Image (cartoon, rainbow, N blue to C red; front, side, top):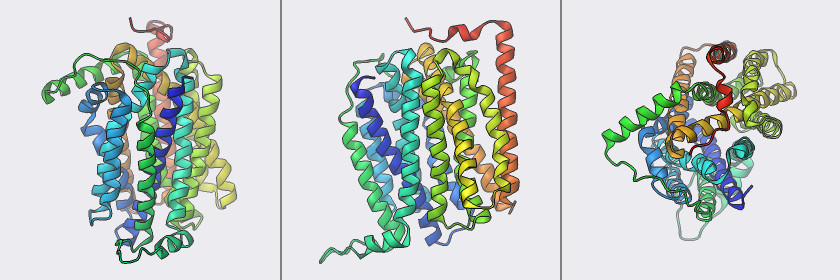
Amino acid sequence: MKRGFYTIMAAQFFSSLADNALLIAAIALLIEMHTTEWMKPMLKLFFTISYVVLAPFVGAFADSMPKGKAMFLTNTIKVAGCLLMFFTVHPLLAYAIVGFGAAAYSPAKYGILTELLPPEKLVAANGWIEGTTVGSIILGTVLGGALISPTVSSALLAVDIPHFDTGIDTPAESAILIIAVFYVIAAAFNLKIPDTGARYPHQQRNPIKLVSEFLHCNATLWRDKLGQISLAVTTLFWGAGATLQFIVLDWAKSALGMPLNKAAILQGVVAVGIALGAVLAARFIPLKGSLRVLPVGVAMGVLVPVMTIVSSEMAAYPVLVLVGAMAGFFVVPMNALLQHRGHVLMSAGHSIAVQNFNENLNILLMLGLYALLVRLNLHVNWIIVMFGLFVAGTMLLVIGRHNANQSQFDSVALIGEVKH
């Protein structure tokens, strides 16, 4: 891998670490405000709205300048959203601003991979990026849980600056201040990302034309025999993954009696599994063999309901690690395939924007449905069973579609094709 790739990984690690720690801190802030339970998944929903609303514009933004510069500017927006939680701005709105920055950050983060690396290295690069991201999820959730724990928060709140009132009076507020520091570290790495020299035609600025161009790119990727399969899988994965974050928190509280700061560790356990699966996929699955992993998605959906019979913390670990490993193993090759086809069919920034739009629209739908089920007081075990069956059933439909595509012509032969 080129040296610049490792700088990108470092920037992604610290930015994602802060995102995930901030989610736990924001949940703690909602608890301190005595809000209703269904508001917790709404945090992620507000974070995700920007990905959907800004999708027609962020691809052009990412392609309008060197990707490192775009990552720096958008990371600064994340810092602003983080700090707004101190100024009586509701956590949902403040986290939405962080999501605004993240939505614009993503096309630059993934788009630079196709500029920096040849197609045959994309699965390995995605394995490392996803492994790094998942590592940051693990440490971020653990960090968020640790920062709001009584021991750490008491120590932070005990720090006194003479003749200056910081206005930081609760565990959640002290955690948010520390998390802001990690966003600043990410910004420092952003400044060190090399310019790949890739330049795209002058980007449209007319909003109507940008929306029209985006809709064309979206339709192009869904019509493509390989693009539609990889896009369907990654769309399902990210919607399911975002929902699983909150299912695990509620399940840990209901089945295992764990408070938020300890339940956050179980989120990290799932992420350990995803990291393992991502690394295995990077090591053993070539880009041309990426579609062979589709049945693993079905197996993951079937495994999820096993959570309902787990009644101890020690028994939960292997189940959650295995669920995560299966998820990481089947999504990393699909992500690489989608990036490759997007780069062949259109520009890097535009293809990632289309991917983000579809994935995050599904996150909105699945989180909205989950929040509704929680508000209707449906037991978490029933939600888990419905969730697992939905994932398995959807993956079976995707496999059926791929088989139908292959019966028409060998679409797999297109993998590895490069844009001229």
